[in-house]
Length: 161
Image (tube, rainbow, N blue to C red):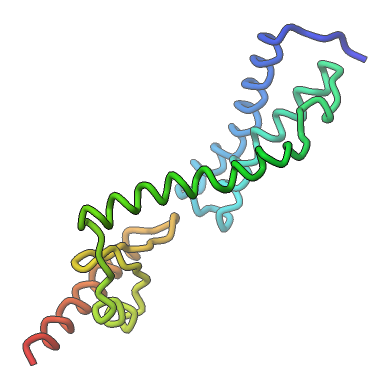
C-alpha cells in the first residue's frame, strides 16, 4: 500500500488526473469540430472525468472510497435541502407577482409557434422563451428563426382578421 501524501500533493494529483482524462475527450471534440461528436458521448465523457480522477487519486494514496464521506445526511439536513430552495423561490416569485412583473403566457401565440413545430415556453404576456438544443447548429438556428417569423406572421394575420 502506498504512503499517504500531503493534501496539497493529493489535490495536485487530482487536478492532473482531471486534465489527463479530459484531454482525451477534448481532443476528440476538437477533431470532430462539434460538441455533438459521437452523438454527444464526448461531452458525457468530459463530465465524468472529475469523478474518474477522484477515484484514481485514491488508489496511489492508499485511501478507500469510503473515505469520500458519502452517506445519507441527518434528517434535518435532508429536509433543508428541499425546503430552503423552495423558500428562496417563493420569496422571488412573491416579489415578481406583487410587483406586477409577472404575467401569463400568450397561449394563442404559443400554439401558433407549436403549429410550426417550434419548441417554446411561455415567458409572460409579451415574451416567449426558445428552447433550443444544446447542440444547435447554424442551420437549425436559421430554421428556428424562419419558423418564429412564420408564427409571428400568422399571429398578425389572425389579429387583423
